Image 1 (tube, rainbow over the protein chains, first blue to last red):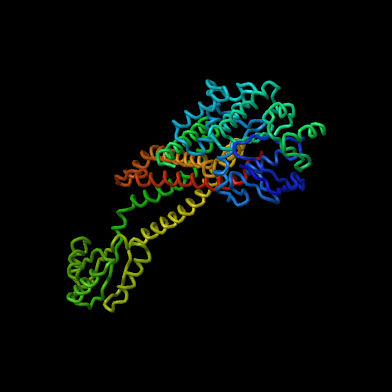
Image 2 (image 1 turned 90 degrees about the horizontal axis):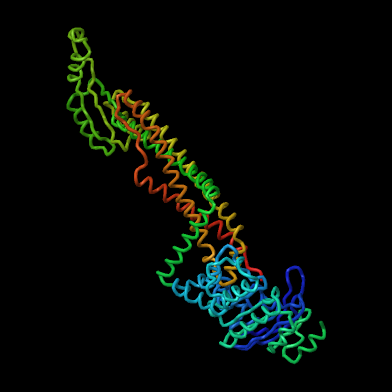
Length: 230
Length: 307
């Protein structure tokens, strides 16, 4: 599903965010992307969602080389990726329903279909019945779940999440992770960037550990050494 | 995308734009007013020209060339000349007044009948009253006609009557040019007003645009509501301009009719015709759309989502 082939990324300000990073994520797999802030986790996710382009190397997503994608095809490309953010990026002046419906609206889904699928997505994250509320009328955990509902409403084959539990307490964090696992169970490829190593250990998925822009571990059993470096 | 689906998308965007405009009534109204004034000015100028034209429409028929023939030209020759002139495309009518008829008229109307009886021979020449077709009453066309008659050896003098009508037509021509210039300048003004309004709105909705692009919204999807906003501004401004003009016509109607009556005319001020209203509304829509398109295309490109 995702192939990073000797990828380096240097930002315009000269900061080298990734240095010669290579890894694969298989179809239907769920992996954690760990490392301290500044280690390059967000850059990896940005390269996957084509918010940035690599300076060197190739990023293949869903069999497509993102380098070769023309600007006018980026929108369609992004519709196959669900993205969850730490700050969830909801539109505060739109009700929950509109927020979740946005990915369907941009894909010109018929209205009746939108209605059905938004309800289904909200049901999956346990927020059915809150469609008409504004995001600010919800708790932080609920807001994050709205963000997740928006990411999965168009049933993308790939779900990426950047610190989705960053603002949540341990119980809510666990709940969110379980949600991601449930999407993996139905065949969605999931990449979660997090620095919460307790949670990572608890869920026992493969871990891609980044440090200083380099990959220092790509399997679950490297985890203890990563923990030791904290 | 099926037609029905794209139709409903467009409707949604349209109502979304309407809702946003309604949420900011004062700012919206001010923008509409500026657009309306910019559209009303050339429209009013256009009405001024067309009304002046109608009011003076009868004068066009009053334009005549008096072609005086030399006194030694025989009647048969004069008739031949009149027939030739009547063949011309720019001539509507040629009336020949023979020397005898002229003398007769003079005797009847001038009151010098007795004095004329003392003359041994008729001092009057034959003459042609030439009325040009209405579409050939510009000063250039009249000058061409004058030169045509002057070139005949039988012609003594060509007098173009109603010089002032030609001057008036020249003034109208100036006004028409002025109208064109005003329309272009104010049209650019409408583009700028709509473009700037859209730019501000884009800046205010930056977060929303970023998120929309993030979930796969194409540039044209993101642009669509702004285009509707532009069209609504243009259409609203044009409707308001129509209202302003209708109000002005209503206020001016009575005084103008009174003035016309004093000149023995039954002329009444006429408002814009349905095609003219169509042009006004169409111009509003097109300018609004274009202003929004230019602004949105330019400013939306710079907004890309950051993770």
